[in-house]
Length: 192
Image (tube, rainbow, N blue to C red; front, top):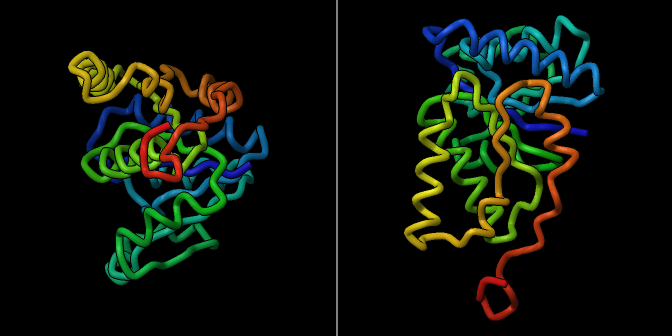
């Protein structure tokens, strides 16, 4: 199984985020899950890579060439794919991926997560999307999405596009237990 992890590059965040990332990385390695990530060496990206490597797991970085040129890449990761653009990078994240996991992060993480949710809603990406809610970080997201549904911008069935869990040890079971998403656009371009 291959899981793509979206997460922060900031190193100025609370230590609980690093602990949760370390724990999750070790859970992935224990379950023989290979990890794909943004390739960075700092913040939760760096912690994720360090923990996977130290535990003997497999990890692949995907990074635009301009980021590599300013040496943002994690030096311990030997499997790297370099892209021309951020858009191309996001597409590569989804290739061969069996699930997406979003850890706390900033605008880049949010943008990747919302694009994946949109693609899933349209039936273009059908894999599990799991959100790790360390320190209740994603509580405002939950509230926003609940309002999106209550205000009829999305239907209630769209709550099944993602799963929110509070602890790292819940992530793998959430991946396994997420039902297949079979919705999307029909041949006439209407939602089915």
